Picture (spheres, rainbow, N blue to C red):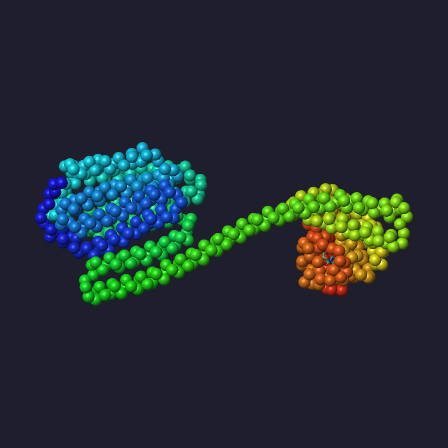
Length: 555
Ligand code: ADP
């Protein structure tokens, strides 16, 4: 290439020399960190196309910065400078192309075909072709320290960049309009647009101000702001790996600081200045090492916690499944037990009634015990079935309006012989002149009342059991079973209605029991509108009262 180089190095030197330290200072960190941003995104983003296009943007910007530094610092060697200048212009246009490609891939969430990619590179063709012609960059004028270009050259670059910039804006706006209603997506697009647009605007504005004021430091400041927006974009891409970003942030700061101070070594004169720089560099490196180490440690701890939480969630899900399987198993097993039990009970009562010959004396006593045991078994199997129905949400209720008074009297009549057999006083009292109409499931309530009365009989070795039905307020009906039996300790009371709760001492009085009856009773009562159930006791040995309240139907 034939360059027209006027020998006036002094003029260029007068512009460049005062800026020299600042030039290294601004270019080297930007060059390194922008490349690091690109590598970081490639390593941390699962979106391959997006991270590659970002890497293209970051690395072309990094190369541009490198060649620009070369020009600034080698203005006296003409042919190398001209070559670097051509590369600067190429990368200049290239990072606009990559910016567009990046925005396009990000917004459309898909790559483009090879053909479209070649279209993207179209603006580069005239530029490259112009290099060896009079329209291209063909000289460097050291009298005013600017390049000599063909008439269309800089206009072409500038208008291509403006054209690409407009394309980017159009793409962003049309995507924003499409997704305006989707808030998270809108936010993502706005953040991305902010990053890209300001990245490019920093370039335009700083270049423009530098050119028009001849104060080239502005261009260097522009580099930093471009870097900031590039970092911002890297952050959005890997936002979901926020922990890693923090580590990266710490590393970027430390590396940035080390390169900043390190690049000062090139410019600082020997002596005190250099010593101070070296000492500072040492301190910063040490501090940076510990900073990165501690951030890493914290991230590892967080990742461990996240992993544990994940495992816990899995274990929980597994337990949930197991729990359901258990309920199903209990339900099936209980159903299977029911049929043979019914047969046993049937035959036993036929034997007792003498259908197979006379049963007397000790044999009669033993068969009676077998009968009691099989009755207990029926209750236990019934409890298990109820629990599994409740847990699977399959308990079916038969809702009706009915009078609670006859129901309570029936329960009383059925339970009286049981109390008599245990030698207990037993009474049922219904306060007269009130209505006991409720809306509920008659069979379930009968089961609940029978269970409560049965418990009172079981847990009262001697003394009395008395049942009351009343209407404490016009809106409520209260069923109450009192006994002066073994009572309940204050610490047991709150847990009484939980599954498998049996009070200390319950076994001494009544060995057979599962601790499921009250749980089932509670679930059944709570299924009724306004239903409440609770127990009262003054303590061990002081008797107990079990209360069920239901909503009274207004007459
Ligand atoms: P189970 O009677 O089969 O053990 P329940 O669920 O019916 O199961 O009762 C749970 C526990 O509540 C009993 O084991 C017993 O400790 C206590 N309990 C229930 N009713 C009474 C009562 N009337 N007096 C004293 N303790 C009682």
